[in-house]
Length: 245
Ligand SMILES: [Zn+2]
Image (cartoon, rainbow, N blue to C red; front, side, top):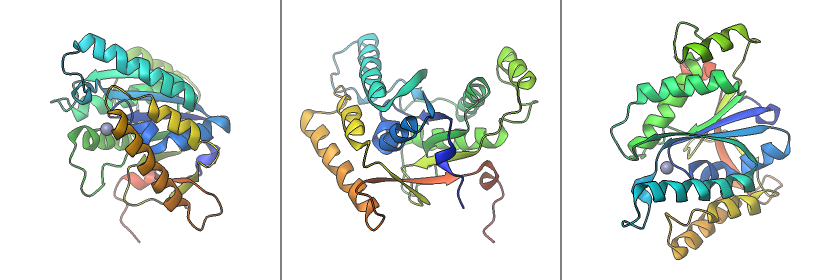
């Protein structure tokens, strides 16, 4: 059985780009927020490549993306945003990201991580592959005290209450083992996704919303609710040498 997401009390959702969490799992994250979980977003890249207005200076584009993300986050119920600003589609290091994810896990002490599934068979985007790999590896390795991040964070974490990461929920997955009921929160997800106007023409955004709604309906078929989001929820123990028995 996959770890039970309904027990989540604090979630760190690590996304390659500004909108991935909301597009793939916004309904689930909003539902878990309503059930009492504190939600934090860590955004890996600056996402500038996807901004449609090529004449917009980088600083203005970055400010616009963050403003849109704040609006989206308010709809979902995000308590805190963290940004790493690695170059979008750039030559950044998966190893360095793993260190940053471990640092944030030690700072925030989430019981669940959310991120992209790095084992989606046809995924070609390096930002997604590296993010999914770094997050799952961090889930596995964060508890080893000799794996150093920031000395102050590491010392606080070592002196604090024992912390247990219960699971990792992977979205954009080809192998879901969990479908979360988002019937009550999908309207908030629609508002969140609708905030991302810097990267989508109005018609493209309308098309994306229709595509998401169809996928949510299909995913929920036969489950007793109208809309669902697919997730692959794994425990840290599933992430290393987990040969099928
Ligand atoms: Zn993305």
